Every structure is written in C-alpha cells, then in structure tokens.
Image (cartoon, rainbow, N blue to C red; front, side):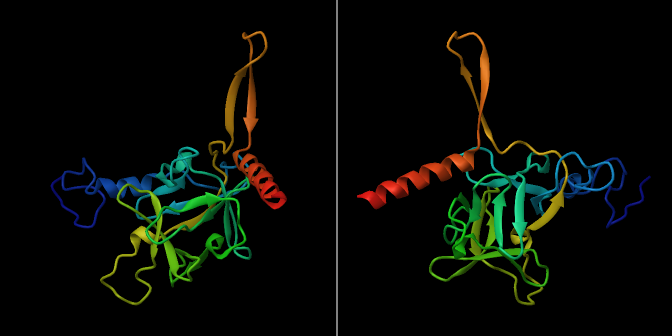
Length: 218
C-alpha cells in the first residue's frame, strides 16, 4: 500500500485504475476474438480501432458508420487481392466519399473509392483514393463517426500521433449481431405473426439494378 508505480495499471492505493480510458481499450481484448473455445460462428473480419478499444459498427440503415462495442461489431470480409472491405453476406462495401466526409456503404465495389490498402510501416492506415485522385485514410471525428481524412504521420515525425487513423482488420469467430433487417408482419387474421427477413444489401442492389434498366429504356 502506498507504493506508487508510475507506469503501473493501478494508482498508488492499488484500488483504482490509473487511467480509465486505458482500461476501456483493454476490455475488448479480455475476451479473445478467436482461439480454443471461441468458435461460436464461422470466421469473419472485424475492424478494430486500437486507440479506443472499439470496433466499426453500423447502428442503423441511415446512421453513419461509427465506433462502438466490439460485441456489437459488424461481420466484415476483406481480401488483400481485391482490396474491398464488405459487409459479410450482403452486397455492400465500404467506400470513401470525400475529404472530411463520413465513409459510407455502397453497392458499386469496383472503383477506386471502394479499394482499401493497409499502408505505412504499421500497416494500420487504411487508405483509399477519391475520384479526384486524392489519397485519404480512415479516421474518426469527435463523435467517433468513421470519416476519411488526409493520411497523417506517414513520415518519421515522432511528435505526430497517428492513433485516430489506426485501424486493424482482424479475424474473429465471436458471435456478432445479424446484418439482416427483420420485419414482423401480421397475417390475414391479424393474430399470428411471422418473420420476414430481408437481406438489406441484396434488396438495395436489386432496386439499383431496376433503376438502371429503366434509365436505359428511356
């Protein structure tokens, strides 16, 4: 008691953490993402943000992507060859929309704005190219919304803090929430209920294809 370890996890009384935010960053790692005894579902990717201990998630169909608990992370897919980060099981991929703008999910996954590459010595800057040729990296704003900004700390500037732009795509077999929307609709009698499951990405993709066909016919 009373012995203060300057670089220790606990404070001088050993009853409280020295830095509560540091404990939050560790909390996501206290339960393994994969390994013995953690094979709850098929392997998928999650996008981890080390400096906050949070993961990229989609809270609703219209809300921007943001950081949140890794227990509620989306299931992503990523292959270095295609360089596309997609929602696993649906036709949606991560896209850069502009400098300082929120990253978005879209269905056109072949252009440069949908390609992401891990750059810098750390390999934790996820970079993409805008339509005007500018290179941007994933970042977060003050509300933990996922945005794209000019890549920072790529040179050997020891005073630069790259933390907000560090993301790591990691493997996981933890249980994740569903990426499908469920609508509960009454049957003809109005008494019993049945579940109508709609794959959000596939539905959007279908509608966009119909619109494209209509445009070509005009």
